[in-house]
Figure (cartoon, rainbow, N blue to C red):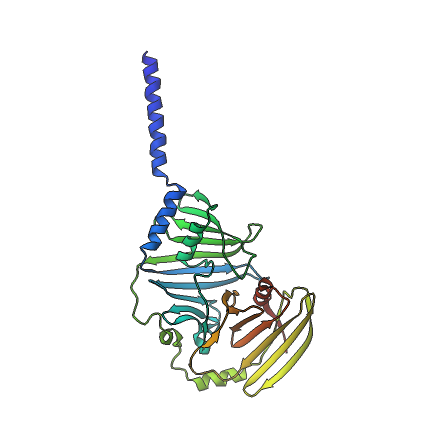
Length: 342
């Protein structure tokens, strides 16, 4: 009888241990609920991250500085750290969506629903939204993070169908995002190094004027122009051509610069135009662009039905084709990094 009592007592203790363990570990539903509540109550945040892209022949890295203020104000600064001319800002305020290149005094206004028109691996709300919208999302709890694997919603790129999102157990904010291809290879990684919830912002932090202000404001446009007239337009060739080959190169002298038109023919034909204008434009109304914002790694581009446009290092690029798919346009654009001396 005494033995039966001891066995029964032992079973009760074991059951209590399992119950306490279960109570201490949150379920997938618990974590999803916490994330949803966190985002709904969010007034804003500031985050710093490093993005690595393995979508071309060489890995590309750049720093991301994200500001968000309720309800619909965003400022995403992307910089390679190599050249100020390559630094760009995606800005959304009450007037619309913009891509700014302050060093070149260039600004584009997009007719776009960004960031609500697709997955954004560096935006907190977008990551939580992807978790909420995927009924088949998988869940794992590690020592430090809650990890979800979900589908993505990249309208302009079907080659990145999955993502792995790590949320800190302490704060429920993202710590790491891996965007995966069909074979589960991580082609894009975003590592967050800092995340501040509900920060304070100045009244003009999301204004065009403040974000277009050059760091070297003391430098005159004349001196910048004088420097840039010395630069020679070097032809930059894509390493991915979708089976086409370079058939013709036409050089066109402009009144204040030069343009190179490259014609590629083969399995799918396309034209690549590169243009450098020697005079730095003064700050005027932004150029209107109809299209989607696309991250090319080296730059932010505008993707239309059959055209991709971007600026980098003082040169404007355009790829046009009636035969390339959107994914192929992006892949060609991302691969424009080899050089041919003119």
